[in-house]
Length: 479
Image (cartoon, rainbow, N blue to C red; front, side, top):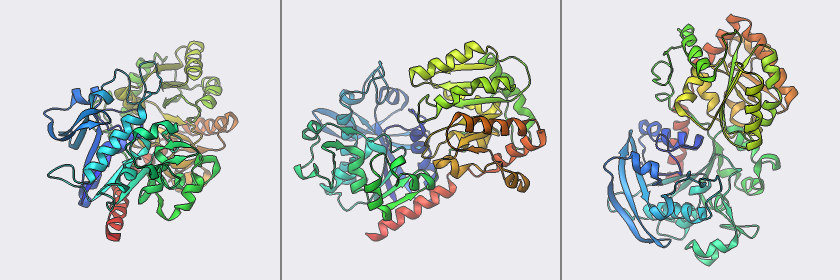
């Protein structure tokens, strides 16, 4: 089976969140199921710098007013198709925002170009390859099935995966004239959304199958609280909706071989984590006092519950804990964590931004990872935590609820617990979860069992890849 995957970011080339990890890991996971996946992505500057010996295999004289090339290249085992369109993607900022943090004003054009290119490839643009099925990710690629409806590729099935329905790609109606779609596409059946143009909305209307990244999130987005305005549309398409929990790349995230950590270790050598704790403490300027180290690797936003976490930092310190934070986001939240670090020197540390090697060390050296998200489609950091014996403390929502077994009395007695869940997302609720974690930490055998049980969890793509393969096959069987 030949599958075209379409994503706006792919690890290890470029990453702003979990979408990149999924797009980077899924192709290898699908190979054992007879699926050859080629991934189309934009040619951002960092991508063009990293790829070696690309081969031009197609292109456009005029892609939304500019020439563009399609480059084929193999990178770290990924079979990539890179859309090299300098006028659209050669920018000094990030994939979606400029150097001041503002969205590019032409994002609609940039990702319409990505989607149109995918539709053209599905229709036979490349002389030597044509996919049997197309798998698109999030709003940046969601116009692909809309373009395909009006192209020779109209019969090719499309899977749309929602990684976070809060990001919808909604633009003013004036952009429609630039999208190279027929007039009938600006309707409720396609991209029209309360008078605007909705990229994700168009994809939800036209994709053959819709997946989310956890079973619980698939149920949550059918409600007004989590559906972000799409709950009615998704309910109408319920037969096409399913939740398939993400996995992680267990070769990249493996404490026994990870070159980003101070000392490798495995389930049978947890004492070796001490070297990583020491390295982590040095990185964040922690003192040598005993007590658990909690870590956070996250965007600092309301969705991630970082305002609630900021309320309980003093409680963590007062109970003998330490907190290491890696992330960036809302300025007020950044300031709150910086202030806490100044208030508690040697106990609270803050690194603004994102650092992939440091994130590995944090999972290897911290005792627990805090994820108090108000909603979390899947979440990957809790899966990394399980893999590294960094006990997750998570809100009971979405993929967090699906992947962490709460350390209640029954689960502890049965020796199946892997972390701590709490609900609702509030300071009192998080404080109670932290009290439970402190109590368990003071019982070394209980804590070691939580770590060992988590490290035995299957966080790979194996089961999820099997489900995707079954979904692909069922769509092709419908013909």
